View (cartoon, rainbow, N blue to C red):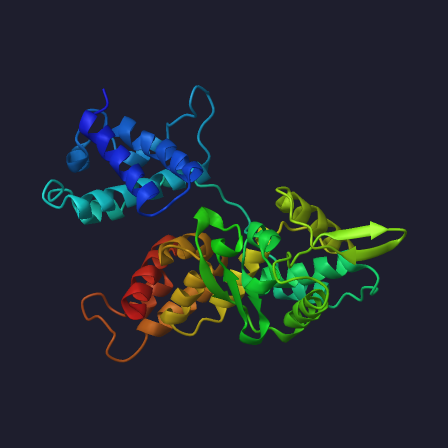
Length: 366
């Protein structure tokens, strides 16, 4: 039987997310789905004593099922359940320090999805070379739709924004002279979890040229409130930009147009979100300090550097390994007890290396 106090504590956390953090109802519903598994695992044990449960949480998740179905939960769902449970327990320990004083922080931080079911797959992202090939396409001036698509692809890469944000982005939110984009919900920009932030563009001249040409073209013809990735009206064989409001199908429209653009560029199709991955990989590979690493995380509008690391560390594991070993392979940073620390890190598995990077980044970036 689920512990009644545990249930009310989860409901209090969800109320906090809605009232204080201002998460939208759909996101809160997903969090409830994730935390229900923590409730079922804890059963009658109070949350402040769950470290004593003999069945480890990852072991429980390895056998978890979809509601009313025989299928197993996907690795993505298991990862989100573990991450959400960790954030919830950290919140509980900070909000109720006396009640949760016996629950070790180290135990909470160690929560992970089951390791033995993690799938091996190739990480896909749009590369800079692919993006340059798209930006170099010679498109007839009369083909406004394809010119817009080319500029939109370049904007996705240099900004790292999601497709939903690009589809709802007004012209007035783009400030190219200062390489900034106002991803503000007050301007109608649709962002994940309704976050608002001013983000910055990668200074890649070949890509910015396509963005700037399109930006100048539409500013002469449309009001500031019109969509930057504007609808195109075709009539009698001619195309013109439109100030019409963007429909709710903007994501599907961008996906369709990117498919066409990749086909014209003779490249294998990659979804709009893969431009965001390409942006992150390009930026993180060129980060010279841990403060740079944190800046990239903030520009992606991630809540925590751990989110950035969890998503992109596998894509840049070689670069991460090189940078961390350079950080510790300096005079004065050797450990007599553990031998050559730099050599130790060179042999370290990627998951442990990833965790070390997060710790170093938070300590140095502040």
